[in-house]
Image (cartoon, rainbow, N blue to C red; front, side):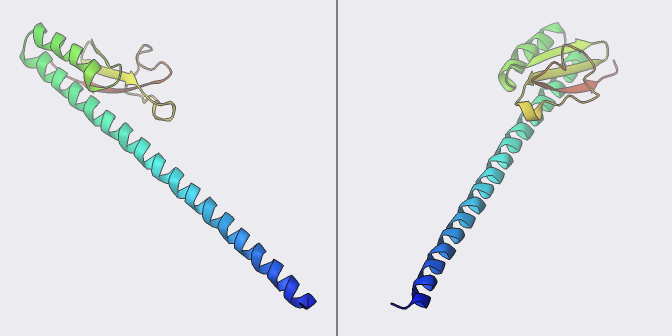
Length: 128
């Protein structure tokens, strides 16, 4: 075997190793992206359920008695994880325990109890 063929054989093996490493890194990047998409889809679905519950509570507050409001308060914990539904004046707020990267409170949740660490919220202003 000549010296040139030994160098070429080692070079081909090195190319294969580099190609496999590049494919593995691309696969891990794709997996990370898919997991991020799934996490954000779950957070979006939770926010949609929370908005539904706040809207239902607002309708119950405007049209029916206190029994319906209490019923929606108890349902809030089942609709979103660790849901806490509260009324303060003309604002109804629902907060829930959220993953670390999804719990950035917005301006609509001004109450200190609603914006504690690890919680996200949805607020709806109503006019009686």
